[in-house]
Length: 289
Image (cartoon, rainbow, N blue to C red; front, side, top):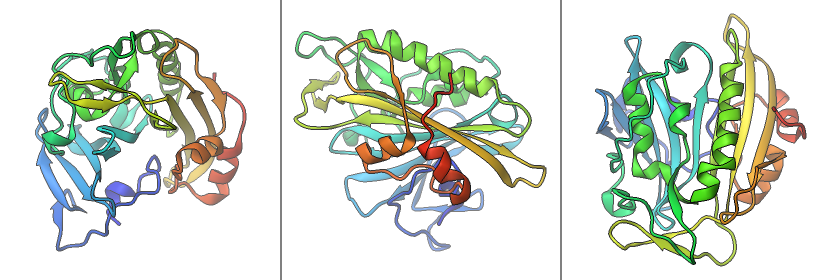
């Protein structure tokens, strides 16, 4: 398995095996690499057993080294990432340098444009409701470098999110998650996996080209805060998850367990966290804030 897929934030993936016969990048092997639109690094893409799904890791340069920005599982059928995973903290590779919001909207260079919605402007209204280009990894989550922030504006990082929710309760919730990250100290790291729900009969909206895009039925976010000793060994982990079970109302996310989100989505989160810490953290029922 490529080391890009071995980080603690990564859910269990369906990525096909990679080897030295595949494309190398920074000592890691992936099926294909692509020049990032923003920055001098490359994105790594992995094939899966589902021809309609790809795993992608975006990268940026900081302090003279290549750092993963975020990873996601993209589904061509939904024209959306089904989960997006990233690490964040108050120091090191993910330090908040307050680089601002750059709004450089663009197709993701690691995916065929035909897989992605054209979001040069926002999604169209549907059923009398207005939908924003809703970030999965928020712009404010990526404030280390300008290039790191600009990569959050790839169309692959968007879903059609009810405008009032995106600009209201969900935005307030994202700020609280960012507060947990900036509250970390030392070697503590916050690992986040976020995504949409697609359940039941789905409605659609359209992109800037008039192409159909499925509307999520809700949103979720799973958090795992981990501590490490000086050798890099994880010594503690605590977890929590949050759910918005609608995409048509401006309601606050409710706290739940990571186990509950795994049941709803079918994904196995934080699979690389040691089981001795992972199991208890994923069943915890308290909120981080």
